[in-house]
Length: 487
Ligand code: SF4
Image (tube, rainbow, N blue to C red; front, side, top):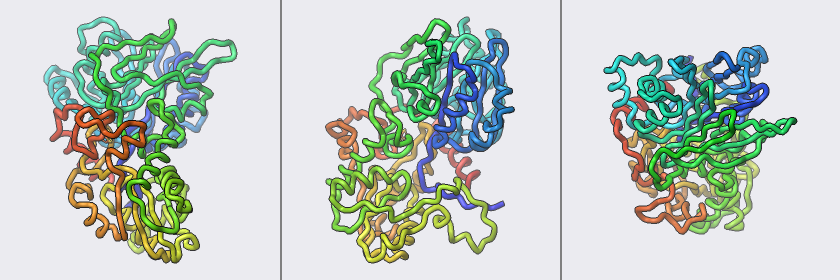
């Protein structure tokens, strides 16, 4: 059945991972954690638990609530150790065999892995592994870890994992569960996030949590302990938490888009509250690109904190001139061709009394293809706005991301094809401005982008990719087929 896709004009979040060790009702706790991380992936979800003797798993397409709200499903995932994954596919089709955590039985016992990010040499490794006789069950690059661990000549699980990690290139955070330990890993540049938390039980014994974001800690009654460091492996077992750093030291390059859009605003990432960071970005945007207007209106939801920052800095009133319908998912079944044109209106509606006759500053987080921006501007004008000025809280998205974020190919990115004046005309606004890359860095408490020593990954805005794109052609082709699958 044809569907209307709403969010096809956004960079899509990658995936979310969550795991617990030494926790009563571990799988119920993981389901709650995954629920809090639902914004990081809505296509599929899964949990693998260990009960001291056996591993148990449940994986399914759809949302966490659709898969894990039935107590009978959770009851089939017993044990005090459990890991889970929310998937928004960046490689591999959206089919059950690609849903994580992936699980395999090795000579040393069972092993489950859940991975967030993208391996940029997965195709090269895949070919080499197939030549050695490895039989792949899925088309996701995460399965490469399973086979590299299987063929490793080291004896312990940890040594095999390190051996595998030393062969992969990419941006990733992963969590893994063996019968001996829960493990969490961040890539050497720390592009993707991972944090450690702790739940203190009634008897005082700690349960440990690994999560993509801090926003998942509250819901399970956990406290934040620390970020897992770039290039660090955290091993949690019956003796406690151990840290291993098997890679050489590299300058971290955390994904700057986590602050702009991906992370939930109530998360604290790399020590910085996302909500406050977005407000500062909005304030910096107001300093850089002021315009006379009557109201500052966010494109909900992600544009809200930066619009608040813009309004506070400019002194122009903040108003909810666009209302979002929270009860529509990512898609809506399109019953007839005649409502095709409704598209964006099913998700956003204009708050006419706020917009009528006003000079409006619309604040959004990014422009990818520009298709949704154009429709929103049309809607605001149709509601009677006298002028529409658009301000964007990220620099122009000129390049695709190959580090686990779903972006269209470069030729479809509006900013890769047009300058700002042309984009303004295409979107239909009276003026358009993006925050500068230096302004973005300043808003994140830095002195601006430090030349060839940037503090973040900002490749989608600068084209400077910090991690080798070994299998670029294959990554591009897989991203294209995923986009075709979703359109
Ligand atoms: S390219 Fe952009 S979206 Fe991708 S990791 Fe780097 S900053 Fe994040």
